[in-house]
Length: 186
Image (cartoon, helix red, strand yellow):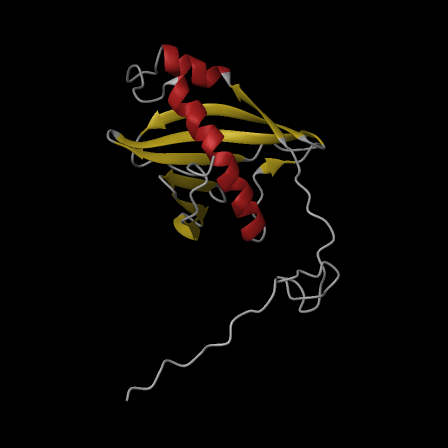
């Protein structure tokens, strides 16, 4: 005679979540959630005259291909989630210039691989008020060997994968890699 399968104890009744109980979170072993809040930030995206001139007339080499307004605007819009994520994850990484800046705007290079090469967009963010920032697109070009200044950051964004780079003493260093797909979660 075969043995019958062992009866596994199941959950009897219903599960009750005690909202006043304490439990672990990322910062403490003994904490209680009291509120969830979403903060709305508004980004204004502007085009610098230099970008518009390069788009319409090109430069001494000729008209620049692959820097259409629609493509550039999409990359700039897609980058906001990645840049915010990196500013939360990477110590000392900031992409927004303070409201009362003394030097010129911090400029980040946004990159995306295309069939013609790497699209590079130079963009700067300025803090305007508590919930308002502006982003200015200074220039764009499709070139594989775009030169970064020392201390400048670049973010390569490709289909759910991004890499944060920093030019440090003439060496391009990979700072952080993310496989979070912010684009498909919209």
